[in-house]
Image (cartoon, rainbow, N blue to C red; front, side, top):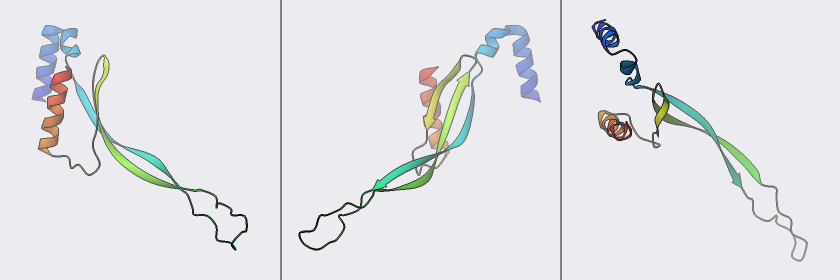
Length: 104
């Protein structure tokens, strides 16, 4: 509640300039499908017979990816995709905030 009152007080004194400086972020999981094509070997047959290729088979494997989006009143200005296997920690957040400081 104290922070909300500070924001209202700042808005009363600075108006729209204050609103333009606010940066928000959200994180979400994106699910995507990676289509892997597997080619099969030539079919076995007697020597001298015409060889035939078996049809290719597609395997769909679902994966998830964490994405963090930072935006202001102008729109999104930093979108960061977490590399697979990365754990969200204070070190990861500090690195992201340093990137954010460069683009603001």
